[in-house]
Length: 239
Ligand SMILES: NC(=O)c1ccc[n+]([C@@H]2O[C@H](COP(=O)([O-])OP(=O)(O)OC[C@H]3O[C@@H](n4cnc5c(N)ncnc54)[C@H](OP(=O)(O)O)[C@@H]3O)[C@@H](O)[C@H]2O)c1
Image (tube, helix red, strand yellow):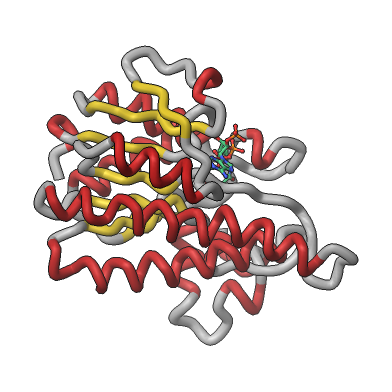
């Protein structure tokens, strides 16, 4: 995939990782549609701001109807609320976070897959997380939505294989954005996530593991004590 002659639609591009992805893609010569619930909040010179709420069927349908030249769909929009399944609002929170982090990805992908296929396959980049494999407090509900989105990503890759669509899952630990504000943990910069994701896209990868902690998490899955049993402690112990 050559980003230079690609047309990207990035959901949640007005801040955080999505904004960094938009800047990186523009710097590599792409045309960029910066999707945002409120397009007036998009401040990215060179990008085309478009209204896009991934939870809203009609917003997604309008985008798919209007943006017929998209060759790369970046499912970046996401929410992350602290909380557990046994909290008083555990069921409601699971529904709310699944709506954006899972159904939002599904909704946007279904809407744009025909466009990608019409341009020879194109690509889908899904912004996932170390949370795909690391569960429990303080982000129990959020982490489960990312596991669901990972399964969706893997299934879509198989479903779209015959059409030549590259499907990239991007996994990363904590990133310095609004989503992790107040969390006193080591964080990578959104620009580093954007660079790794677009490098992976250009290299034809299926999966991008952005940082060392995420690479260790993935490696642990083939051990007797994977990270979903041990938590981050196993990584801290071997660091
Ligand atoms: N930060 C981390 O540590 C981290 C780590 C791994 C993965 N991720 C993932 O990276 C992605 C981006 O997160 P971030 O850290 O950049 O968070 P962020 O700074 O909080 O930005 C989230 C973005 O998603 C948008 N969004 C939320 N709900 C939406 C909806 N229904 N429709 C359209 N856009 C919506 C937000 O738009 P508004 O401005 O309108 O709210 C905002 O642009 C998420 O999928 C997140 O799960 C983050």
